[in-house]
Length: 225
Image (cartoon, rainbow, N blue to C red; front, side, top):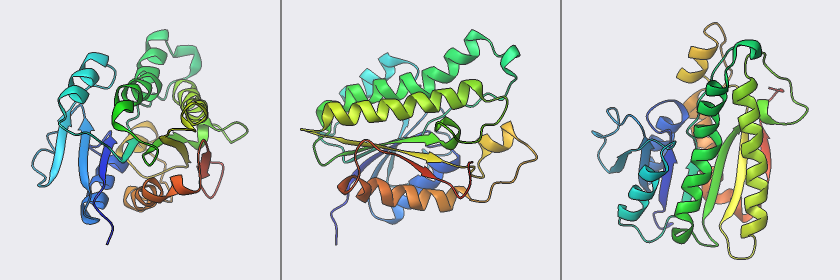
């Protein structure tokens, strides 16, 4: 039997993040669930629910300094913000809000957690097929998809910088998954994959994928997207 891992999941209050919490719990791992809203998390026994705004670097600094843990095995940067709006109507404030969560927040969290990560640790960034060069694109997602493209490039760069001493760093570029965020952006669209199904795959990859992969942005989709 494998020893329990120390796992961080951001964006844990709903969708894939919430499903990941259940998956890791069922596998017997120690889970830190990070989200701005933890009303649905703080009553779950056996997890560490952390209320945090990842766009606020001071909150990240404060939590890492007080988390009481000397090592994390897995960090899943799952938190995401999506705005569906024509580019001509998308403001600089919209772009900044999306990038602050999807790119800057992930980068800041990784940087502050580095002292608690080792060569055996795995950073897994959740990207999107819309952020993969050459894939089909959805109109209205200029801020979201471009931010996910940036997250993929960041993944490759971090793997290069950390390749000698770790941690390993990969990204999964997901196709459409049936989540609340997708339903809010595209009310009439029905995705072929549920959040629970995708969470099972992500959890397994986060625990094992870094043994074979580093610096990879892997498309997880039957189509594009």
